[in-house]
Image 1 (tube, rainbow, N blue to C red):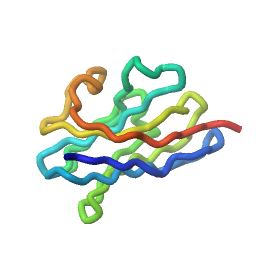
Image 2: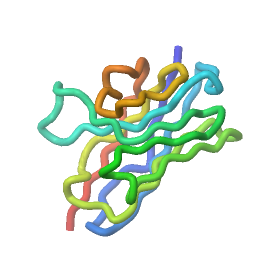
Image 3: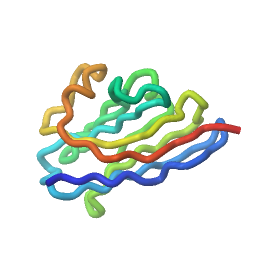
Length: 130
């Protein structure tokens, strides 16, 4: 059974940075795309916003255009971990961030990411506030 454990969240001031980690197990990552998602407060039950994707084997990355300048996805194969580096954080970035997996290929229409991923972790809370 695939499992994902997210970490690295916390309270950060506006303009700050965080690096989130997604430790994956129970699946052959070389066959999967890993995506980062978030769910803002009050949006529980309405789905997740897709942020970034990485084809684990090749390292190809895809980002939501509006977040591309501030968020970067990467992976460390030796650690079986996928990261989300976030910079210039804003209060509107406050959310629970989670990772998920789907078989290759990546989702072309990133507005449909939530519908196209099969597995998801429980998430880590990111709060951006002064």
